[in-house]
Length: 212
Image (cartoon, rainbow, N blue to C red; front, side, top):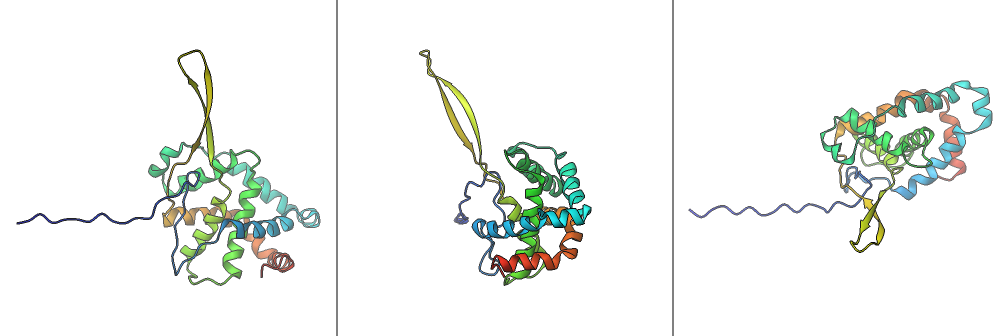
């Protein structure tokens, strides 16, 4: 009897994504793009940083401070440890990796999460289930993650030393339903009340920016 031949499965190539590549999507589940979310983040940030709102409602300032106090305590594991992490640890690792980048703050994660939620609510979607919403929110936060570089010294052996900059591009997928929902839950925990109470103000700002 001749042995059965198994053809190799054709899998899409992974692109360098600074440690993440969230669910690819498809014809029925198109993902939001990085450039699209920039305008949404700017609109949400204008509301959050409004002096009138922060002066009138101290809870907004407290929300931002609570986010920083909690998220900045998360452990920052190496990229190699990502596959063995639990969904909760993956959510915390994503936030920790973003916050250790120069110029990133907890406010940026909060703004990106709210913007992802609003984009899902106000734009046409083929899928309206909880998983699609969670991935949209998670992906909008993932966009904040930059590629990481490390510098190594190379000795030629003849007395000269050169510096080599290496880009760390571990190709890790975030395809866990639970991990995406943990990311969304972290945003809802801190900003769920804000999105409900200031819904009208957010909609007004989005209309000014001609996003809806």
